[in-house]
Image 1 (cartoon, rainbow, N blue to C red):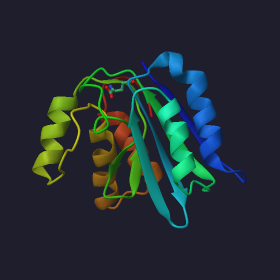
Image 2: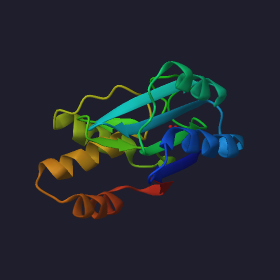
Image 3: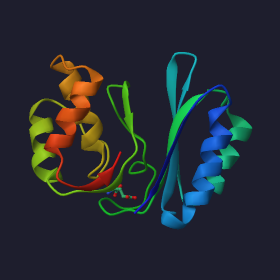
Length: 159
Ligand code: GLU
C-alpha cells in the first residue's frame, strides 16, 4: 500500500506534490520520492523515512518545475531504503510511481535483464519503467506501450 500523486499545470508542482504526500502518508512512511520536470530535465528526489525529509529538500534545491509525480512507500518487495524508494526510472526518460504488487515480477525482471536492462533496486516496481522503455525502444508510441504494459503485468496495481 502506498500513496501516489501527480501534478501538471501552471503552478509550482513541488509544494503541491509534497502536500499530497502528507495527506497520503498514512498509506506508507518507509520512504518518499518526487520526480520533477524542470527546464527540459527531470530531477529525482528520494528520501528514506517520513515526508518531512522531502519538504526539507525544497530549502536547498531549485524546485520550481510545474510537472511532477510523487510517492510515499509501504515496502512490499525490497527493504525500506533510498535506493528502493520510488519514483523509478529507465534510460532517464521513463519515470514511474507504483502502488501495489506485480506478481510476475521475477519472470519479467529476467526477460528485461536478458535485454540488457540493469536493475538498481530490489523492488517489483522498477521493472515497470524498464518494460515501458523496452516497448518504446521497439517502436511503440507511449499510448501503445502503456496498453502493452497493462497486458503484461499481473497483479493489483496503480501506476
Ligand atoms: N511493491 C512496491 C514496492 O515495494 C510498491 C509498494 C507500495 O504500494 O507502496 O516498492
